[in-house]
Length: 161
Image (cartoon, one colour):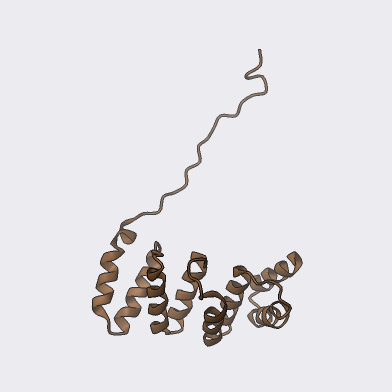
């Protein structure tokens, strides 16, 4: 199983999307192996990169998006991006509303902006303004940089009598 996942990662690195789709759908998933969120993330990404967004949407609906409580944020964010890139704005807004219904808040300003843009393009300027007001804190936050504390190295003789 580990070797199969390494093979998928190698294909993803080489951007061989068609082969990822073949390998994921026809072999791994049909054998009942690799039914993980990571495999579905790779499959959805490969379908999107291979200009097969409708199929990515179908995989999302049937396998991933049924229980938004357990779907990782990274995968939800990726699906919003797939919908945005492929002009599936009504589906983007629906996914966003479903996530809000499960009380999952957005903390990524790029995603909030995409949702607001989609609402504006769909003729919902009131909704756009409401979302921008609701998530105004996301735009004012700055990312905290991780700081590493330099600790002086202890010599081998320290702490010994």
